[in-house]
Amino acid sequence: MIKTNPPVFSKQKDDAGQSSKLLNDRLLEIGLKEKENIVQERALETGLPYVNLRGFAIAPDALGLISDERAKAAQAVCYAYTPHQEIRLATIDPHNEHFLELIADLGHTHKASVGVALMSEQSLAHAYELYRMLPKIYVPMHGVDIPEDTLKKFKESITNVMDLTDKFASVSLTDLIVLLMAASIAVDASDVHIEAEESGVAVRFRIDGILHTIATIDRERYHALVSRLKLLSGLKINVEDRPQDGRATLNLEGERVDVRVSTLPTAFGESIVMRLLRGEAIRLSFDDLGFGPFVGVALRREVERPNGMIVVCGPTGSGKTTTLYAVLRLLNDPSTKIITIEDPIEYKLEGINQSQVDPSHEYTFANGLRSIVRQDPDVILVGEIRDLETVDIALQAALTGHLVFSTLHTNDAAGAIPRFLSMGAKPYLLAPALSDVLAQRLVRRVCKKCALPGPLPPEYAERVQAALISLPAAVASEAHKIQAQYVAAKGCPVCQGIGYKGRIGIYELLRMSSDIERVILSGAISEYQIRDLAVKAGMMTMLQDGILKAMAGMTTLEEVFRVAQ
Image (cartoon, rainbow, N blue to C red; front, top):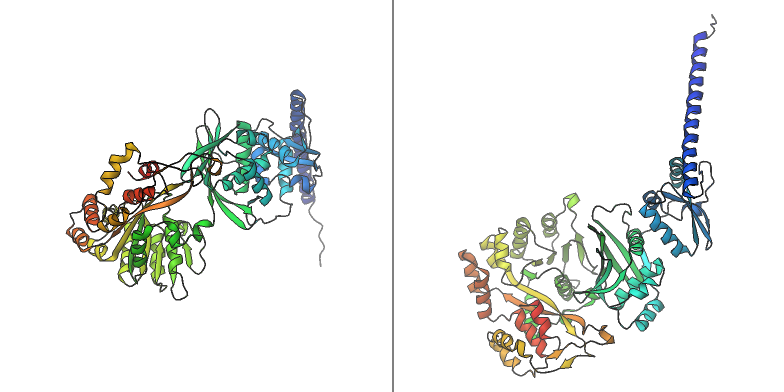
């Protein structure tokens, strides 16, 4: 075998490559040092300490004090932390808005002084690399714990929730969120609005359907509050130029409240709306809805039919979902197969198969309903009818042995039929399939503690008389037996000075008749024609139902005419 030595030029090439690498490393090191020197000089000019985190051992508990997402938004990192004493933050931009919010937030939350130092972008990149080494802890649900004693003390100490400005200004950011949520629970608010305006930031509660301004907060606290709420609801802190939707949870003793959080960019900052979904809605029974003897008896008989389609109408927030859930609870038994398709599923109902639409996977109301029909259900709930395809499948299901419930956005019961036809529903399917249309609104109950009885207000006398002229004969005979108890809302500590506490529904039930069917099939149809036929057939209107409830002292005429002109 002939032995050969390696070529000399190969060794020379390796030496040249190594020298080139050393030279590049050296130039890179010089460049990094120059950048660090620039940051160090800038720190001297601004009067801030300078820190170089490259090679700096940052403790995991310090690094984990701020989430990586929030660190990127604030362009900062916590590099030292002594519990309840000191927090040291390093940043590349001390004027960053998110960084200023972070300082205020950490100081309030951890009851510690916050020190600020300046660092380079290389140091920040090094810190981001360290975040990858932190153990990832899965948090299944973002939540705020509200102890029962805190809620109890709040209810006892606050007599007027309409002005909490001073109370909000005197607590830390963490306590502010707890106080805000406790206040909303205490007054049974359905929504919390935080609105940035030109003159300030308003905090408003929707109580029994009406918005009330309960406090104002300063801009500095507003920005910190928005960041904290985004963290709790799983939203991106650094996204401010587009809407976001998230969820959070309020943990009460014996109850968990789901909170839907929505953000919207506005001219003066982000608008935050939190909708509180409490379990009381699904605990309402059919008899708790306040139908009254006439509508209640007729509707109960209709929902116990084996087939047909019943539609509930009204604007957003009029209680349509609550009504349908109460009906499903009435029908829910082991011998009945009930399937729903909703967007979204607001409350979980035991013993009922609930499905949620997902447009991103082409799972729409129409596609879902088509699959539901193949599941052999007895009762079907379609959360909302929005298009022709869904209408057609729902009508076919109602004609083939299923009882179908759904909702529609119309002003009254008579408007549902023209609405179906405008979507393209076939008259020969709609006439035999549609059984009933229930329209509803919610009016506020007058507070029992401060209601003032009195005579019929003169400004309403003529309107009441005109509305009750067409009252169905069966209802009119009973109405004459009612001793009118018109009341006025005064306001007291029990109702937080509002005069109202809780809500009750006012309804009108349009039942399909042969006359209405003929009009549908003729094609020449108008909402007014349908209404006249329904009234002649004995339909009591929402306005009439509301006036009777006002006569019974449940609400006020002012409230009835506000929602049912």
